[in-house]
Structures are given as structure tokens and as C-alpha cells.
Amino acid sequence: MTATTKRPIGILISGRGSNMGALIAACAAPDYPARIAIVISNNPDAPGLETARAAGLATKAIDHRTFGRDRAAHERVIDATLRDAGVEVVCLAGYMRLLTPFLTQAWAGRMLNIHPSLLPSFPGLHTHERALQAGVRLHGCTVHLVTEVMDEGPIIGQAAVPVLHGDTPDSLAARILTQEHLLYPAALRRVLMPDTRPEATADALLCV
Image (cartoon, rainbow, N blue to C red):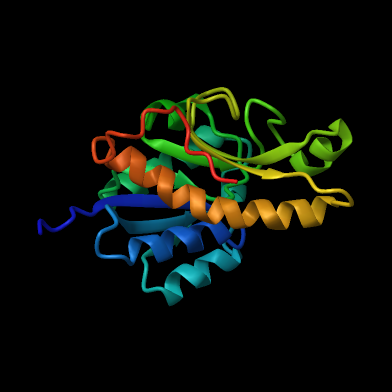
């Protein structure tokens, strides 16, 4: 059996990084086509940094507050750190900063994000509250490529869950988070190994 080539990825977080945890677990499998070269946070106190260190991963905190309003300057340091680590693909995992064209263009086609809704519905924040207010029957999450327009990049995969009677934003979020942890590693694998599943011709991975 041919050994799987593990391509270096970088992960950007701002908080606990639960989706980062799912990627860490996936990358531990011998046949998964990625290894985590570095985890970067804009928040030096992000709990996810300790999670990454406990997993033996390289980490770096690049505090956005030291750059004032100069977002691009902050992103130039992030970009240099990613490149120094040899990163080929970037995964945003709860990274709570709006990106400037500098970083989105530098990593065009090589930066992924996971969003807690079935895009194009409910871009932005407070997706679960908005889904319940709208009365939708299905809600879910989306992995997409990052572009200059927030939450509008090409969709790589989606996972859907039914909205149940009596759901609250918290109960809905908890069921969707379970799907996020399954979807993100599957979508990243699809990006890294696009020719390994020729039978998968749909534009999205759909899990219910």
C-alpha cells in the first residue's frame, strides 16, 4: 500500500477551537492526507492554544491588538508565519476576525472556513437564532473557500440537520457542532485529494 502524503496545513483560531480538535484527531490517522504544521491565534489567551500544545503542535499567538487598526499589518505577520511553517492550506476554525484582501488573495483557493449555517442562508453571526426565527425545517453547516466577501466563497461541503420542535439556539447549535466535527475533516480531505473519490460528483457532501 502506498503511504499517504501528509500535506502541511495551518489552523487559525480565536477561542477554544473545537473544530481544530476534530482536525487534530483526523490528522492523527495514518491515511489522512494532512498534518498540522502550526496553529495560530490572534488571541494569546485562546484555550485552543493549550489544546494544540498538549497535542504536540507548534503554536503562535499573534495578538491583533498590538497592531491597532492596521489589519493588513497583522495579517502580514500571520502570512509570514504560515509560510515559514511550510503551510500549503489554511483552515479557519473559529477565527473571529474579518480578513482583508491581503490575506484572502495571498491564500486564494487554499483557505477554508466552516460556517454554522447552510450557506447562502444566514451568513454572518447569530445563525441559529436567525434560523429559528425564520422557521426553517433544515439548518446545518458549510465548509467553503474563503474569498474577499464574507461567507460567499465556493462551497466544498455541507451537513444538514432537521430543526426539531422545541429547539433552542443552544440545542440546535449542539447538534450542528457534532456535524461540523465530521464535515470539516471530510471537506479538507476532499480539497487535498480531489481525485480519490471519482464517484463523488455532487458539489457538496451532505450528512443528515
